[in-house]
Amino acid sequence: MNEGLMEYRNTPISNFPYSPNQMLFRGQIRTRVAVHRLVLVPQIYHDIPELLEKRQAKYKEFYDRQGSKQLSQLKEGDSVRFKKPGDKHLSHAVVTGKHETPRSYMITDETGREYRRNRRHIHLTQELPVTILNDDLIDESESVTTHSSVNSPSVTRESDANLEPDPPDTNASSAPRRSTRVRSVPVWHKDYVM
Image (cartoon, rainbow, N blue to C red):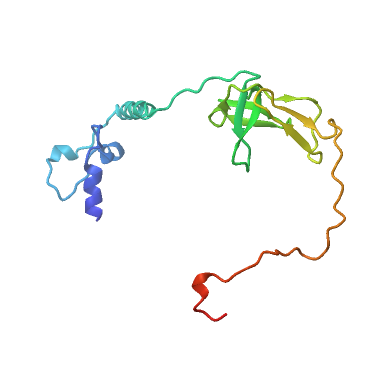
């Protein structure tokens, strides 16, 4: 096994004129394969760093061709959709500004909560921007009702709409509720004794 690794390290790298041993030890190392004595003489290779950089730049160029495209820049006030933590669906929001980190934006959702998201996770929409009626911070304890329509989505508080809460149900008994549906044994249980 060790001899196989020695031969492998003596073999030049693909698309590169030198082997790993030549880069590390300044020459080939002696193995069981017969080579001329001059091949084993150490030499100084000055062009290794430049060749490695060119090779990496070429790999990068081909890698970057793989269907990646630049996403458009967002402006303040653009209507967008994004995914909130724990939600399955995209939520409506408005871009409030650009963050100092690259490709990141600050966005505000319908409830007035602010998020920082990368451009990859923000979907630009043609919907009208979300409007928040009251600029005060919204408490988590206050209930928020969302009135959404195709033309003008807006957010209002329950206290602003002067809605009365539902009265508590006084007829509820403390006993657990049971189903009144008639249960029948499945047909394939006919042969079994229950």
